[in-house]
Length: 285
Image (tube, rainbow, N blue to C red):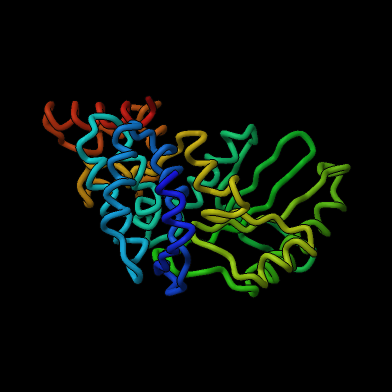
């Protein structure tokens, strides 16, 4: 109760990656730690420390780093899961690994998926990042990956995607294969959308998925729900190891657990291999 009163009576403005200011929320910090699976006693230590330490003008990155330092002491998967946002930013520079991950996300939700396909429209052909099909529902997905957390997807992208999907749908509606199909356009990003993008998409029946959009059902929540973590979240792999895996299409922790063939790409010592396998299983506990 004392902590809540402190926040309400003395709001602390912090800076987001975009440069915008927002009121720091102990509740949001607590929820993010809970989602990461941190122990209750660790969460209380972080919150108590944060109340003494935080000052106006601190950045969200500074707060993340401070909280993460407490989680390092836990012998569980929580410190790894807590760095999910940073791990997503490390999947680049190419956007293709992100497209594969989004394809896997739709697969987790029961869709048959294809990644990086060329589709014929009524006027021209179009490359579609992800095609997700379930019964007679087909989702046509454009992925927008950014290495910079402060980047947002501008209105030009939904406008462009809506027009491309319209051209594809016009063609598919002339084909017997797609008779009675319902088509839904999507834009998915690991960062955020501009306000115009959100307003336009609501008006034009275009689905959006961003890191924290829609509220409580954004990309972050979906990845955590399915435990679909990118391999960049692993601390036992070097940057070179991660880059090699990503380049060869190994993008998620689940892939590494379900198929051990990735091990053939490296000459790991038995000790390092055991460390990697242990970390993989901790994440999915």
